[in-house]
Length: 465
Ligand code: GLU
Image 1 (cartoon, rainbow, N blue to C red):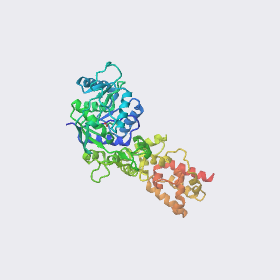
Image 2: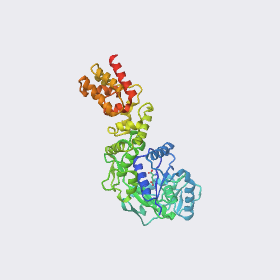
Image 3: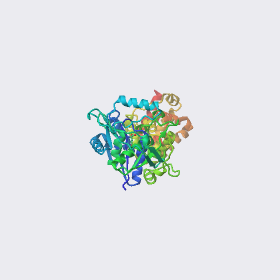
Image 4: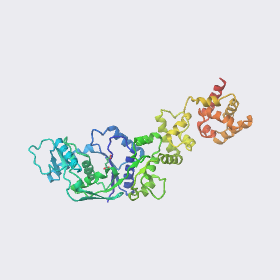
């Protein structure tokens, strides 16, 4: 049997990390089983779906590399197919036209609530032949009245629903548009989905969907309902807790490798392993090791993983993500050091690429902007001789490498009888504009000869002006 999974987001807003985790699980499971992973955009709710949201979903998934084997399919392009099934069900007596108006339904609801019953449709139109067939109506699915629906969920275990608790679901609205639970099952049927992996907020939809799938005569898919992701206060993770949209994480300077690694562990484990390459995730991922209980989002752990990947991925690869950050800041990087060199110089100190871009900005500034307090404190007549001597030494350096640069820096102190603590900060302000940068030898080596000399001269001029 070819395993087929699907990720089926509704494009009504940004792509939430919870959705990304579902997509990742669907993608990993399909890859692990050498099956197929499908992307389906559930855009039937025309009022709430937007093209912008579709783009955010596609961009987010592409950024993470969660590419689909099939799709994206769009439900709005499949209306004829939904209509075909509705016609078929009407003929077969599996669905019926319901002419109940708002007033009747409202009255029904009130009397049910008064009798402390759960509000539900009473099946009034099941047998009714109306005088005028063209009068406004919806189509309802004839849900079985007796028996139960047993779900052997791969995460939650056995869950049982009684059919008498379920009423006859509207599958087509008065305006002719199909409804959500119905389109899902037609698609799962047509796309031959074998495993439905989704958030457990959909668990209540599952018995209704199973009954409709049975009406289609489809061997049922297996279900895996994944627990929600919580915020640090135990409530469902939302904007109130901080970043939740996948593109916000990109903006924060999180690497895709780190976010995927973080999300795979948020609800799944393989022994006590924390770091997983994509290949390892594919190799080890299994639905049986999914957690039953919800997990809380832990930003510190995500940052820890991000730092791990910043430090260990090839510098060229990290440099691409750093370039994106500079582009967002509208900083041009062609006039400065190679970005991979900057990554090597900065990666021990930065947990995100945004932080790295901000702290490396000085490498690319044409006109260095001094931190005012640092300038007043360190660019003084006391440090002037050291800056001059260093400039002299660096100009005549045989090779522009960390070691000789380090020697030149030390020799300045020896010649002038000064400790590094006395003139080092002035050198740092001169070349970086502030008091925070990697070690001076590395910063100078990365910055390059021309810029370093130019900046030292500018600092000297600033003091002597
Ligand atoms: N479109 C649904 C959502 O975005 C998912 C439905 C499903 O996975 O069955 O929540």
